[in-house]
Length: 69
Image 1 (cartoon, rainbow, N blue to C red):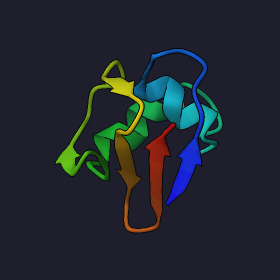
Image 2: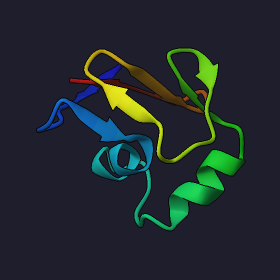
Image 3: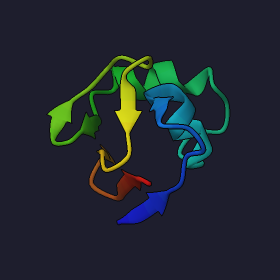
């Protein structure tokens, strides 16, 4: 599991995926979230505006696990 540090108390899921280099461009997030491969704290998530806070765990497919730090 890789930690990704944020500068504020909260970050939106789309911004977080870009910050973590999971996607190259902000426009890629819609496709990724539509693929139903993203979970937040174990629950499927498809909203790019979902608010994430420190300690939240974002998983993309079977290969990528990130913790908001």
